[in-house]
Length: 202
Image 1 (spheres, rainbow, N blue to C red):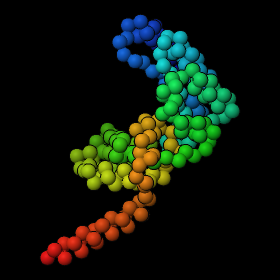
Image 2 (image 1 turned 30 degrees about the horizontal axis):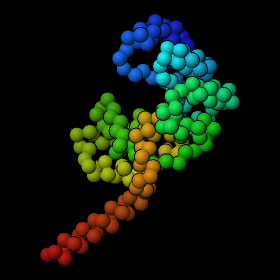
Image 3 (image 1 turned 120 degrees about the vertical axis):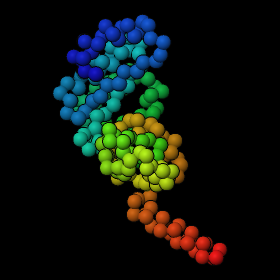
Image 4 (image 1 turned 60 degrees about the vertical axis):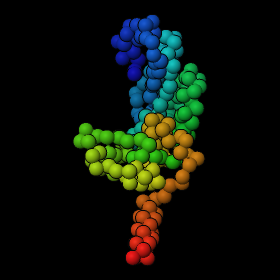
């Protein structure tokens, strides 16, 4: 939401503040070459005035990866964070590294915990990494879920996509991941073991 769209939507937001029986969170984005980063702060301030929670996200570039913030953007980013919901902030630790242009070490479980399904009905890691794995949803099996859960994603250290980070938080302390090459070797080893067991059974 920008300051311009806020002017258009402000009346509807006031209605929501008065009558909504559900929680409302307003998320602003910053970075990615947005011309007026101060809009994020204006939107967040209005959200808190209306009693809504507010969050801020660092926008990704065309590849869905890191685009470091300028000094002005960093200043606004931290100002908006101070206005935000502390519970949400706990889920977005990674953004502090992203804002500084630093990679963040975590285990992305896209393709398993998180599925992105495109308009063609195919499963991808996320909206920014189409083609991985690019399998039709109807053909996606538990083997695919298990493989992607274990697969180390090359784009993870500089990923800015909040929802993928959030669904993978608990998995940061769980099973380690492997590169695609390591996974192929592991699968070949398991296949060999299964074949050996079948031959011994005969």
